[in-house]
Length: 80
Image (cartoon, rainbow, N blue to C red; front, side, top):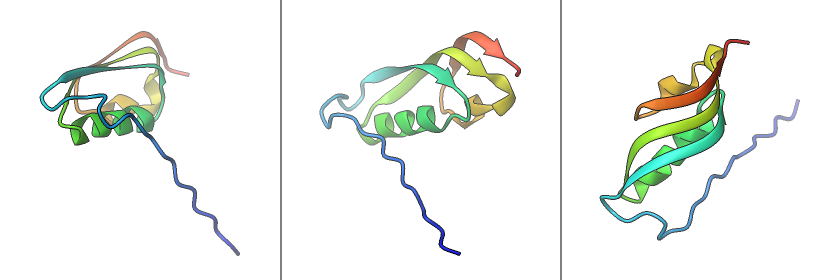
């Protein structure tokens, strides 16, 4: 059996965030939290601090917000 490993890539402009800058991460959907967590890690890598995460929809049953390093807010929460 051959197993192929995929690699997800998340990028931002190198000068998009200045050291010490506070950032709000905004996305349409949080499910498992992987993309939002990656965004927060990029903010930290650039020397910034994530103030909060904002989402339109949160799939609460996947508990993605537990992976985040700042408070999160969503407009719609769905349990299914």
